[in-house]
Image 1 (cartoon, rainbow, N blue to C red):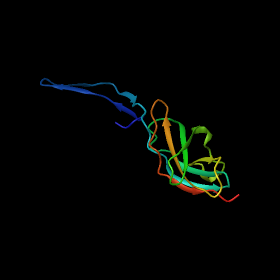
Image 2: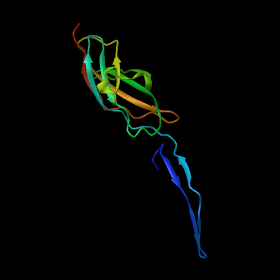
Image 3: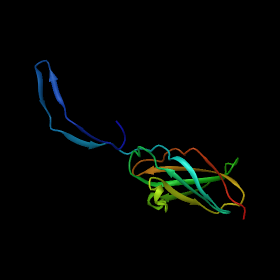
Image 4: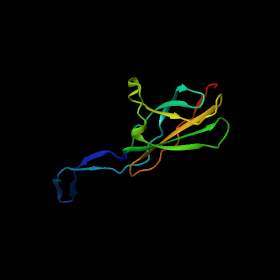
Length: 141
């Protein structure tokens, strides 16, 4: 069964004497699970000390996505800085990006290449894997 999916079912018993009647329909939803990773990380704008990114939320979400993690590191290094952001704080100001989520990674060094990744969390579920890394560079000061 697919996580966090609504199903309807009914049963019919059968034995050597024949078939019984169908039961009433029963509806149920499966439990949430870890979502797939966010996709299509894109650099929207670069600044001397920040990079604005956008990405697509997980699909299917496998639950209600309530939180994201965004992490970054200078390219070629593994010393990640990570922030957790509530899902409702990632709305894009550009109306043409209404299907995407946006975030500004801050406190960066000028003229530095960074790798940025995102991960999603479902209510009552778990964290997704990290997205594919996005390579992006800050501008000169």
